[in-house]
Image: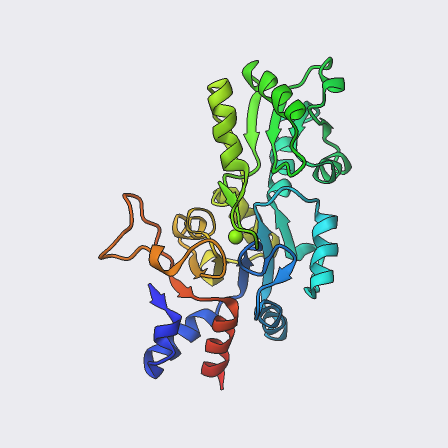
Length: 296
Ligand SMILES: [Mg+2]
């Protein structure tokens, strides 16, 4: 594990680390806590993306946050100053839509999520309803739990009703909390625990990071190999785990969920199942400054 701020002081070793970073050709960047918090870009993130473009690197913003449609993400990212093409974005909704089309073609889906996200599923041909009382007379084949920032008791009780009936149950992602400027916000992992307490069931499938399929989907999209890929993110059990379990180098940034004192290391693994990042940087700003210094 390489701490970039320590490497900044050591010229020879720094050069080797910078070379490993700059030789990557596909950069997979997490969003919440890595490139922005709420709607505020993290300092250095826009410049880092400009650096990627100037070096003609492939890059993709990959988020587990399924509360918004791709269209909303494009608009929000553009407002923040991130100018990207459609191929530069992938969400756990994309992975879920592909999974549904593959495993449950033409079946009816009950989706606990936002109306905005639901529109994306419908545009992709998924026959889907939100769990409102008025929709409860129909029959469903699959239950999908998305990050529902418009959650109501009506939706929750109806969703639990159908989970209890034994439908195949999917969560778009496992994140327990979503980082924000106000602090952690309850996310899908917290909802999974609530639904388990009520129904006794856990999801049959949890998509999103660290699931290998998300990574394979992106390697295929860009025609890249694992060895030339770097995953950058702020969370150990999603972003960094996806790389660590699949032989892909990772860069942990400390601008979101993970704090310096909770980084596991060989002497202090911080638990029974430690996840070791390849590189650690305080933020993308520090990463860019490090790389530029070594390029000069
Ligand atoms: Mg994050």
